[in-house]
Length: 380
Image 1 (cartoon, one colour):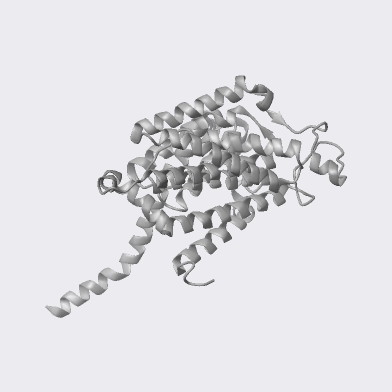
Image 2 (image 1 turned 180 degrees about the vertical axis):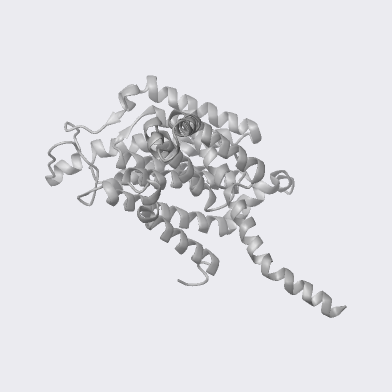
């Protein structure tokens, strides 16, 4: 690859990230997270977090309504699968376009304000979108039941080329069903591509402008520079990332429901970004993986599993540990997540990536201190 396209450090980061992502079925297996459904969610919410970080981490605009674009992407993808074809590519394309247009409208209105007022406006629009999907637009969204694929769907493109289906319709990629590990690698390819695009945005002149807006937007405006087009562009790009993630979730799990647009889903992506490290490339992805791991693994632990785990302890002691640990897993997994989040915010305000930087800096400085001391002694 030409060095003018990517710096050596960026290339190494992209290659390392790609290796970690593609090898996840291997290195996550000992942690009980090597099965396809969870791996797919790791990829999908990683894309969601990368896109959200472009708006929040680079530009400094905190949105509490990004789940709206996630839900729009899901609904658009399912309608494409129902009306046109079961092939996933058209569904992804339409989802990104519609989500981008929706983000353009919402961003144009919300970006008239900044700070907490911007956040409140995005939250209001997200809740309006949720209520529309849940109760008002039921002919389009199917309300609380959710939008699903059926055998009676027209699928005009598939019908035109003579593709017939037996049993429950399953999304495909050029005729190959998307499921299992094939679905994981399909999602992984999009995550790597999304990560690469975020790298290019962060290192481009456009990305420098977004960082300048975050640093001191008022000063830029005093110089006569119009920051709104840049902020709006970041908002739309971030919304398109969210739509892509929603489409992938609909393709791997052919269902679109209003719950994907709730304010809690928007809050979750904020937590992912803060936990991993706001403004970093890898941090939001790590934060998304940690939260989804807690949600799917810790929540599945119950007293019977804990009893088998602590079975090696003496009678009475094992019961004590099962009682204590049981409060932090199963239905109480949110308590564990809350404790982790509090510890990170207090001791690592920059998120997990700040901890990684501190450790790396400590290792680098270990070898430098003795040499500096020897040089001082020699001078004396």
